[in-house]
Each structure stands twice: as structure tokens, then as C-alpha cells.
Length: 374
Image (tube, rainbow, N blue to C red):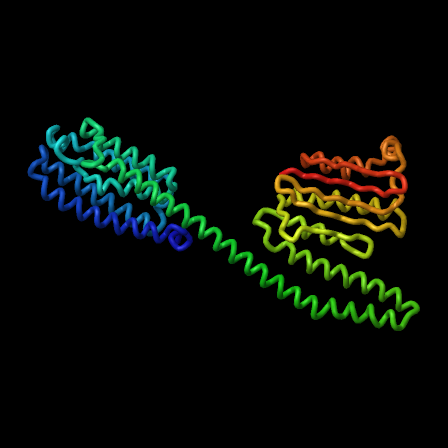
């Protein structure tokens, strides 16, 4: 049932209690003024319609069926029609001396429903409509708020209830997100413990024993050590991803996976959230830059990745200590049809609305500055 999932369900229930009290007040008012109406029998018929509609609204809102725009708008229309019926059941003089036939207190139910459904942006316009209907019946709008504060009360109620509904929904969404993140964190910690207690420890043991044995086992030791470090980076990147908003990716988690014996990665202490597709493409450009280091900078060259979150932009620098790129080498490669740099790095950043700038000198290594604006 919708009421079980709706964050505003308690407010809807409270609103129906107000509806019950307003119907009681409307009944007392009807009994008191019925003899003064021009058409008392029609007054009771319309009052029966009022009670029937109130019961239908209460059931619909309590079960959740009526918590949708069409039903709320229909309630407002019914309220306005009943208010305008004052001209049919009562004389002009009676309308001038009294409030509208269905009392403004009962009419306020429509304002409350609109505020709960649409927030303050719906509650206040509904209050204006109810007030305008009352002013039309009377033939004037009273601005003497000391004697008639109907306008102020209706607007304030639409604003207050609307804000309460918006706050309830926001709090509910945050609670749901916190629950999902907490469950994900617990599962991640469980898997991390399992990997650490099992696979990582076995790989560490193989690496250590292989180096002790030497010979052909030393090669296996190196492979085991490499896989151990890769698993540790994977676990670490999962922990770094914690805290990114839903629909976003923490760039740190992606960049951290590039760290190895030849690549040092420096990351901010806090999350670097980017849209998932943007973060993936930026990380791919970093990967291409590191591939170029491995292929062209020499077997002993090291690479350094630095990520900076500047608020309105994110910059990732990829620098190496290799021999650098000779002048004109990139243009020559492009003429030969090798478009790795222009497509995989420059093209990627341009497609994201960012910029890739290369700094290089022979003997001084190379540095890529990859910048993305938020």
C-alpha cells in the first residue's frame, strides 16, 4: 500500500483528523444557519454532498489511492464549486454578513491536501484560489487583517504544511540512501575481510616462499606478489568509493587502481565525485597516458599521477621521468596514421568539454594535464 512507503503518510493521517474536526464544525454551522438560508432544503442536500465527498477524500488519502495530482485538483474544484453555491442557497445579504456556506475552515482541507501533494509551491496557490472564491461570493476582498485574517491564515497554512511535506520527503530519501550505503559498506567490509584473510595471505605466502626457494620459483613469487598488490589496490579502491553520491563515481577509486611499482598516485583525502561516464572517460585517458609511458619512456621510467579537485574543475596530471618527446614527433605519428594520442587522450577530453595539454622536452620527461570542468 502506498501509505506504507510514502514519507508524508503521517501528515496525511493528521490531515484527515483535521478534516473530521472541520466536518463537525461544518455540521454545527449548518444547523445554526439553515433556517436563515434562502433554500434550506437544498442546503441540506449540498451538505450531504459535502459529507460524502469528505468521506471519499479521507478514505482515498488514508489508503494512498488519492495521493496523486488529479485527485487533489479534483478536491480543490469541488471545494470551489460548493463555495460558489452560496449564491444559490443563501441571499446576497446573508453572504455579505457571513462566511461562505461551506465554512472556510472546511474549505481549508483542499489547501492542506495541495500542500502535502505539491509542497509549498502547490499549497500557496491553492490558498489563493480558496480565498479568491470566498472574495467572489462576498463581492469584495477584506484587507482588514485585524478583523478578517482568512487570507493570511490560508497562505501561512499552505506554506507551513508544504514545507513540512518537502522536509519529510527529503529526510526519507536521505534515510533510504544512508541505509543502502550502510548495507553496501557492511558487505564491502565482509568481502574485504574474506579477501584479506584468504587470497591475499596465500599470495603473500607464495611470494615469500618463492623468493626463499629462488630459481624458477622466484618468477612465480614475482607474479604472486604482483597479484597481491593488485588485490590490495582493488580493496583500497572499493573503500575510496565509499561516500560518492548515487549516480556519481568517486574518481579516486578509479585512479587508485593504476598504482603499482612504477606508478605513484596522489589523491585528495575527500571524495572527488563526477558523473559516472565522465569519471570513466577521464580514467581511460589517464590509462592511455600511462600506457604511453610504459611503451615509450623506457623500462626504468616511473610515472606520477596527481589528482586535484578545485571545486568547479578537476585536474589530473600524469608525469613521467623518461626521455621526453622530440619536437614534431606527435605530428609525424599522426601523419603516419597513428592517432593514439589525439584520439585516446586529446579527443576524449574534448568530447567531455575538457582539455588535455601536453608539456614535454627532450630529456625532461612528459606531463599531461587533463582538466574537466563541472
